[in-house]
Length: 245
Image 1: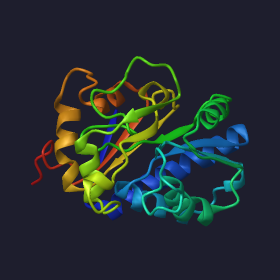
Image 2: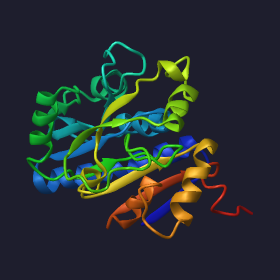
Image 3: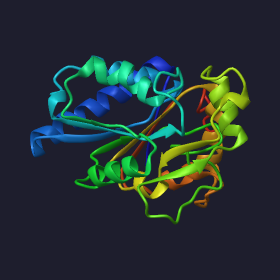
């Protein structure tokens, strides 16, 4: 695991995007195409914006996979992650080689799993939630399943984060369930880049880094076992694990 600390969210986003762009260019040069998994939420705003502005990426050779989505939430809803990725990424870098969204149906999950496992995922951008979740694998996360996507129940801390980020007006408005890439499947990515800015993530980062054992009560601890993990923090999110001069 490598940790890089930026002074703020903007520097973090630019640095992470530059790193991801370098990987995509390298993989495309070596294999002819690349496959990426994108996460969403407020913490990914700056990274995705900066990635779209990177030059020299042949996006027509890139396949994008969707990490998670709420159950029974229309794509027109402001909180829809399909809407998020379409507006913030897909439309800005089009044409992509392929775009694979989560639709939540059994048939859709089966088809998505088939496409996902057709070849390795070269890089996954995986955030860490305020409750330590990865994707929507809230604690206690299922570390045993070998499925690619499962339907999960969202805990109250997760719902509060979604409300706090402004996606929903009240906690009761947040869907109770989501379709999430599993912890197992996330770990199958060849490389993982985790961008975690903001002071509200400081507790989760402290628990993730300072807890010695891997535990499904802090799902992000699993990321530390990945052979190629790059964790990007800003000074706010790193405040409880690093003493700044």
